Length: 258
Ligand SMILES: [Zn+2]
Image (cartoon, rainbow, N blue to C red; front, side, top):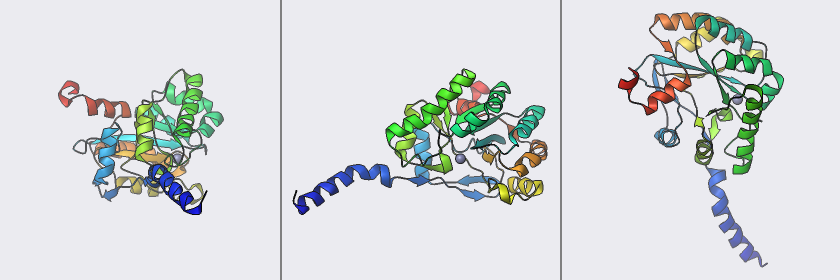
């Protein structure tokens, strides 16, 4: 093939390949103290379109606790004990590594009434893998979860918050809600834990109405700070609700729920 034709063909091919490659997005929001943060209006539209969420009703003092469980550092049981004692619902987004390593803990999450969400099997950048690979990443974990608990997953959290319109649509078409977050802090570095006061302060200075909080269970600080965080936020009038409550309220008018 003449070089010129090859270049033209390559460019045509690029036009078709480009969207999947070029459309990678990195989730972000602008913190606003104890007021709800803001994010790109394009992201808000996409999440509305594909029935996902990043924040609840910003006019209500409701908090949604969500944890990412990539692997276990020994604190998840403590977190589950606190949630159980204080009757707080949460969602745990697990990986293939986690379910293989910690099947008993995953069973307990379900038994305790928590939501177990899909953080993909191998934690890849979902914007960079093919449609086929995306489906394998999500289905493989769901199958393992179903085998263990008899249940299916319905919430997906993109690893590292990288995503694309295509990835959101794929999740949506598989029956998942894409769940991002409106609160996070650097809590996942296990060799840089700074004590429970640091976790407490980091949470309290940015907590806001409707917060979907992303916390990592590998954080010793989170585990130790959680009891006081829950008690003090309740004293401030906050209520802890589940992602099922959040998605139910998105679809059904408020007056039915009251
Ligand atoms: Zn992760």
